[in-house]
Image (cartoon, rainbow, N blue to C red):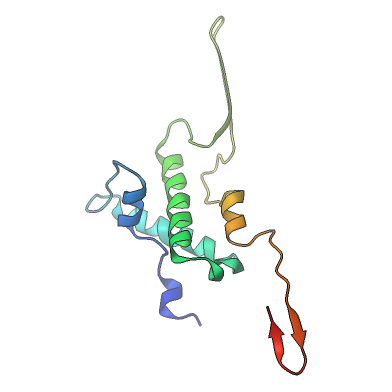
Amino acid sequence: MSDETEQQPFATVADLEKRWYGRKFAGADKEDHVKVLLEDASDLIRRYPGHRRCTEATLRRICCAVARRTLENEESDLNSNVTNMSETVGPVSQSYTFGNTGADMRLWPSEEKELGVGCQRAWSYDPFEGAKP
């Protein structure tokens, strides 16, 4: 069983507001929804074993980024996750390609790298003294 700190989200609604200039969720009807998204993002981050080696600031930043992308995808008519966009003027044409159309929570490759994905770590084991990093 995990301790109390393992169940706390890495970021608060106030942290998200500070990183997303002009947006206020505290006191709004969306505050509870944003809290749940921050909890879900924290749970997603905890699935990466490298999260234990990250600073609190890194975990807070990644948590806010994941929650913000999810909110943007929920609120936008045109998803913020457009990976390719093409428009033509004469006989009108429009084309969009979306990277994450389901709006599910994901970490970007740069965030996964910060959590230790793809990083190697060397260590040795001395049978008389135990493991050494």
